[in-house]
Length: 439
Image (cartoon, rainbow, N blue to C red; front, side, top):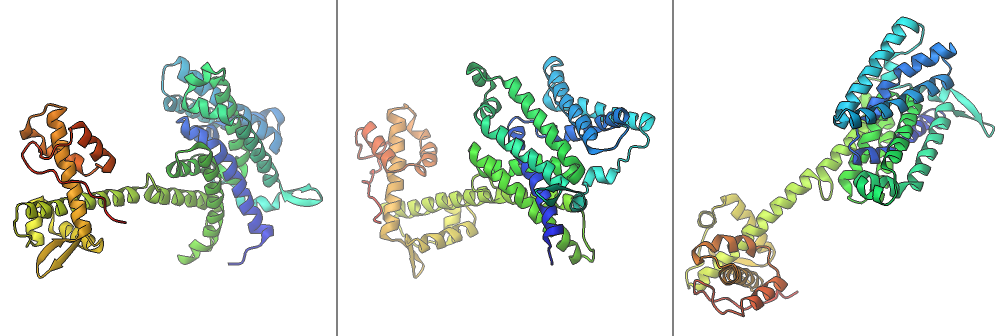
């Protein structure tokens, strides 16, 4: 894979600038539950393009840009107006506005602007591969016009977010609190919508509808999976957006060759790459990832089963019963599967809390301490439920069993004080003394 700055470098930079510009604003769209507004704006600009051609009789970029931005701003205004006065939700108002304007744009083009060159594939996928060919002079160097335009948009969006970060955050999370502090939620909303329209239109020609809509939503949504703090979310979304653009171009020129093709659309592949990063976050995010939650749930299940096993063996010792047992017996006693019991026994042996000697399971010192603390927690909870909650002794076992697994030393001490240091639980069983596991 041979890359050249004059071609691949400018393409990647264009994609990165588009992605970063969209992601900066997209964070607040996601938080405001306006995720599809970027899509609505990018569809609704069609009548603006047609009107600009009718007025200027030209297909030059400036009139088209102005016309599209004006209609994009009106899209945001009409959406808010319909939502507020029509008493409908945000998604319904967006659907009404952008479909109506998109249909109006089609009518205008067919009836009055039949010679406007609007290539459907260009509108969808953009022409990011062609951006190095359309250049302007900047400081004596030829720079792609799309890079200059998107660079200006990135700077404008970054300045806006930096200057009004507190206001944007407050109005996104609590508009009433913002209003009580003298911050106009409506003004912030319209300012954000104007910049969303400008960003969408500025990105429209070079990267097309697919990429700009993807970058408004996917990087911020990915960052939202990774953190619960606002500043890290914004920074992560920018990094994720840039990474999606870079990986997308590299994938566009390498992955198709695996299947016998030369290349594919770079802008679409950038969107796919951003989607793949989102999928990874959905699966493996530290707090909200599906796989991480599943592993955490399984570890909790194993920990509870381990508690139950050592407690069962401890109670057998209390009753001076044999500790000879196999996985089938333990599974039957604890209402668990043999495989789960076997895996948990291996875990306990690895933690040096259990040893097996000729078929006899014995608690080690560490295992005995764990079991004693668990049984103490259980019996203190039973005493507490009888003394403080006035529950019948016949109904306390199951509730104490649920709470015993989440009771630490300070809570046991508190239970012991509140129940006046009992030596036996309501069923007459001895409450063992506490012992801390040695380090």
